[in-house]
Image (tube, rainbow, N blue to C red; front, side, top):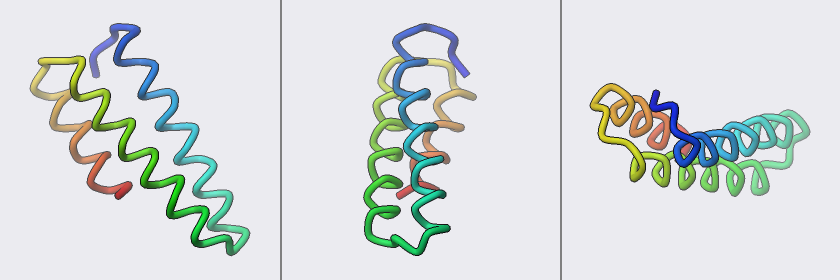
Length: 68
């Protein structure tokens, strides 16, 4: 992944949202978990806008797809 701080911020937010979604899922709060996953996907997409590294772009796109 790219190491620039502009990429890191969306990645950190995406990870935090995904962790929160997992916790909500475990609690049976499906709607809220889905909303957090969608927000995480949006952050992964935002991160793709800040890098041109092909491997990073592929990974970020896969993460966005898997969280949407």
